[in-house]
Amino acid sequence: MSEMEELIKKYLNEKGKLDCSDGFKIAAKLKCSTLEVGACAKAMDIRIDSCELGQFGKLEGGIYDIEAENRLKPLLDEKNRVTCKAARAQAAGIGLKKIRGTLKEKNYDVTFCELGCFKEKLRPRLYVKTKTWIENAEGELLFGKGKTEILELIEQEGSISKASEKIGMNYKKAWTHIKILQRNINDTMVQTKQGGGEDAGTTLTPVAREFMDHYRKLQADIENYANERFKELFLKPRNKKEFED
Image (cartoon, rainbow, N blue to C red):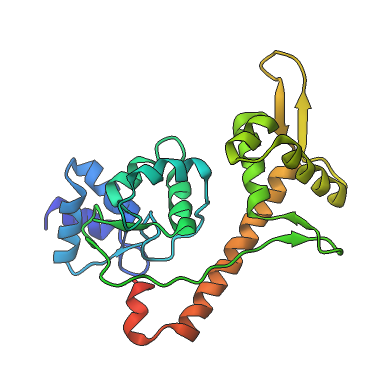
């Protein structure tokens, strides 16, 4: 048995498959191409699982990110597809979780898997989409994907004005959204320190970070349930391979 075969067997998950991330680890360890690892796994009749770009398997935790979208957009072809290699390269500094979440959110497809799992999808992929937001008793929108994005940008930029400019929203509207949320939860979401020192600017409070984290978990739980139910209700047996691997 070759060293590559031994490593593949060593890294098998509980389902007897090789996770995508482990395939890349093996390639790095052996200083070989990922395609060689994928070909070896295929010859051993071992399937690749948990694609780090979310194309197959059930890897969770993807997060939509506007910076990730801006990085991916120039790489898309006329069918809104990006190669696996190009998509992975954009993860530098922001992580694959944000690339994966953005690919899913924007319905960008991936071609030419670096482990050789696929070149192009032969059929259009089907999706169920969900949208979750939080309202008060009067039906006023308090929090959702857009508000999360604003807070994320405030955290990145250290400024409400810079964050609102980046998202294409005027400062007054962004600040109004924050004030409405603060009033309804009776707590503070942002803190601003005046002056010209290193600590100057606007930061998120622990309450804001916790709120964002809980919202993401809620959205992920709803999406997971919706996807499973969608498979049960809408997928014909011949199409299941599009969602399962």
